Length: 515
Ligand code: C2E
Ligand code: MG
Ligand code: MG
Image (cartoon, rainbow, N blue to C red; front, side, top):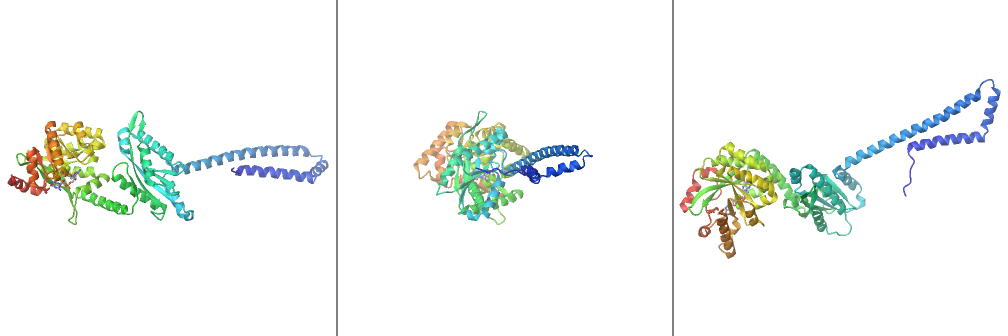
């Protein structure tokens, strides 16, 4: 049981009562009252007994007054102590979820550095919600707050005896003491599954995911702060690989992250200096053997003359929030270039998946077309299936805006996703581009040949144009022609080339000669 310690004002009252009792005992012991009686007798001419009575009464009243003052003082002190405690709590906690915050975590890290003798071992889990931004954007901040509170409750219930922190936004950290040899990957998967349970607020069902990274103290760092940074690094890697991933920290992740941070800086500078430009690869009508359009493919040539492929820098641009600026710049440039081509030549332009969850995308694209003066019917936008799956409702709104204005939509890399066919029944595409992985092996692989035949038949049935990507051999071109494929694209028909080569007719001539 806790011993109750007297407060300072109570102590003061005790001191006063003790003094009073001491004086009383002394007067009793040494018969001071007799001396006082004698003194009053000797001076009976003066009304000393009245004066003493008045003194007694005022002393007693003074005692009561002091007690009341001490009580008030005690209340005030308690109020201030409580207020100080509240300020401390607010400084170290997140007021929305009531979980401890980054400051609290920092103080634990600092304490762990001082207290190295404690020999505690920890597993640190860094957690970031997948799809949380969409909740805030589409359903509003009330729903976002409700989601965060529920996530906090679920994590606290999963780790009842450990510290769960909210570091800000949709980032959480769990600091779990390790005893024995727990299966941390399994624990990470449990975090993913508790967060993955559906949330329902005001009748709206919300589906979220979580990316989890974990690191061990002291194995993955000399101090706890460093281990937390490492688990955060593992979480970033998990996030980049998609939804609901759990990743343990491995030292090479730091190099990857540093490389990515460097690339992000370089990319920012390259966009500012407009160093990333579109190159154009011909789209050829396989029946008439003539160019009907060009696909714009982003090319980044660094100052050292090295080409960085779009598969490397487009994901970095998406992560760093640079994709809107980059796309606007590239599209404006491509549309301007397309103005110099014959009127029937179409410009095909790739959109990255993340962009289709931006409701203003359609308006921005149409504004660029309007500014440059390129008619919408000369533009075709290539989207991938994953782009449509990520946020089907917004993607549909954005695509409808564009289609209504006359822009055509192509389904790129067809056959590489897991729901390609369902995408075809959900949306009306103008074109399907068969992924080059099918074309690469279809001559030697009978099944691939049948798949391509079926896709071409499907296109004919749906009234959708079929393009085959990655044609590198003459025999591939001939076979696709025989199968009735409409359009072809690939190194055989023309590699991506800068606008200067397109403008001089270099590419065009090469293809016509082949025919
Ligand atoms: P994609 O849209 O499927 O583009 C076709 C890719 O196949 C291009 O790669 C092209 O150079 C390559 N290719 C074309 N013919 C052949 C061939 O015969 N053989 C082989 N092996 N490859 C061929 P690239 O330029 O590296 O682009 C890769 C991906 O990056 C593109 O795939 C597209 O998804 C994306 N991308 C390119 N430019 C942009 C852009 O401006 N914006 C966005 N969001 N994505 C872009
Ligand atoms: Mg494409
Ligand atoms: Mg493709």
